[in-house]
Image (tube, rainbow over the protein chains, first blue to last red):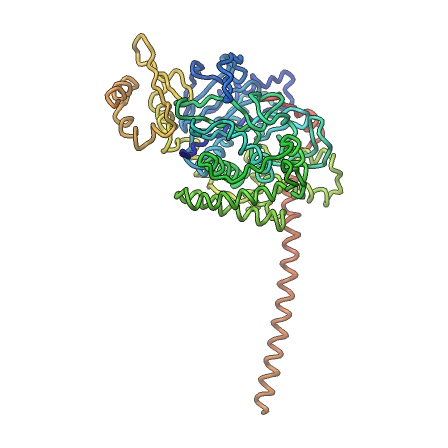
Length: 493
Length: 65
């Protein structure tokens, strides 16, 4: 039953302009998106098919008041198939649909280059002394959080209750692998000097529709952006944005693996926890990875032990069911990481943001005799996530070889320009380049063209794995205008 | 017999030299590990925002999603 895991990530970036007295984050975000000079088309993001208020547990079609989109603010589709836009008060990059976790990690990384490039361009328009900073993070240390969301394609046949049942404990335990680390705690949680994730403190429910408050471990948004009879899209909101490429890859790859296994009924146990929300906080707050959490009424377990158990099940599952090389690679990386976390977590500093950052902070504490609440440590922790190639500390670690990379700068650059070849993002990206004047509106599952006729033409894209280079490459090559494209697609059907 | 003794002495001499060389190499390794961290911290110091307190105090975001 497991269907190919098409994956896409959404990153809300932190934005600030120092020394700008009238700073308005929504306006600044619009300015940023408008400043991007790479291949793109400004479009009306068409909301007709959107349904963020529909709940996967079957509560019907509430009009939720589209809180995650604002029709007045700028929306751009990029030549790589991504969406770059303003989500309330943050610039957001939603990467193109990708057919495997490595590709998804690459296009996630490409988002950093897009905002950095837009920022460079925007700086030329700022007043002297104004300092624009864009951070890939999820928490401002003042009680506000903004998301990093992962999206995974699932079969509609999978009952949502199964998803909730099996995925909850995964989300709690995977934090030791997904966290980007931060100083202190927020939202009234028990104080610790440093914790593994940026997001844990903001999660208060096991299941729910909310994304801005009372955040749930499992988000029930039912908006497949595809054929709703066939597909589900799991919208994961509990993850951190990562600077580390290896970490992004592992986060997406292992989660996709888990979801495939759930679809195939291949998990022997859900490792159900007595209190998943409390466990979420406790796992994040414990750097020893040894915190005991209550397993239903079956005793206790640690997050690391849970991850090891998942590894035992999923490595076998991958071996038996998933022939593509990428899954064997994900498993190998994951196993090596768990070995290190079990024996010497400091070794994970070359792969996991939280460990790399912690090591950095400890080194400064040691050298400069700093207390945990020293502003310098907070600055280091924040600047780790700066997307400016010169200022960003994660990039410094990458260049020194202290933080492992999966991609070259050239590959990431190419990923800002060209879409993946193996999903519908290919069609979208090509249309951006080929028909910039005609493309007037877009959504994930459709494009709308003005071909000069009285009515606009909508091209549905209900299948995430169609619209690939193989399927439409030649058709696009032979259609220099949108009108010809529409005609050819009509014949094609 | 005399030859053997000569060879043994030469071998011993060689061994001593080798030992010294190893010692020197070890010291170099230790130094460079510490140097590396110091290096990194210095590099970060050079690009870290100068007014950390002000930056961090004023860094606030709207809640998102």
